[in-house]
Length: 215
Image (cartoon, rainbow, N blue to C red; front, side, top):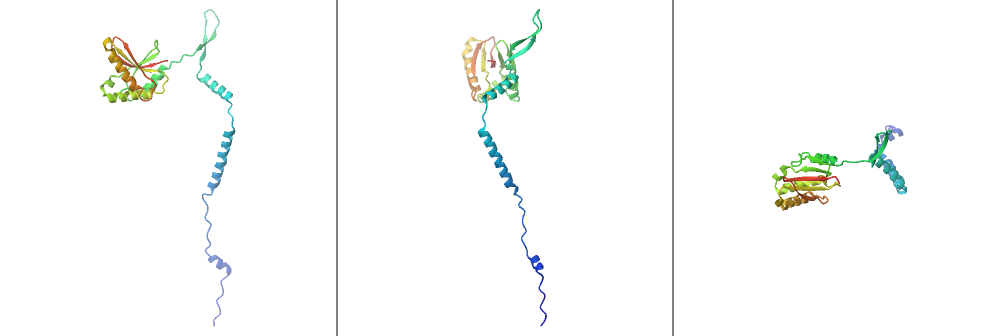
């Protein structure tokens, strides 16, 4: 009989075992992130729920900004005749019509009807007047209504009154002028505007104008 084979060492047996390797948990950081986010949210909810707004301080702060950037009065230097130089407190006069004019023309730039709209300011009446372009009257009724509504979408949020003024040269045509003014005003107000005025006046020549009042 041959001699029995020598048994392999114990370490070799362990090395031959296919031990599972630990896989790294690459998303483990999410647990810490979610935990930290939850703590922060809870902290800010707690702060918001316990805060008390000092209305007096808030009104003083907002009033200070309003007085600085939107003053009701202004101090200007004056030189009274025969007296020393001094200052005078006067009310601030704001001319809003040129601003509304630039806003209107910028919003309607490129429009097929209103692109060439040009206004003139009547300081005595405190109005801005626009002659309705002749291109409007070459359109059919539906297109005219759409054009008026595009114009009304620009003036919808304005506090200033808007009117359509029809000037009639012949008294016999006042009824027709009133009908045109009423239709145009209704179209202009059809996109949610406040009531738009329709005006008919006697004049030397016929004209239809958009009027923005300075109020």
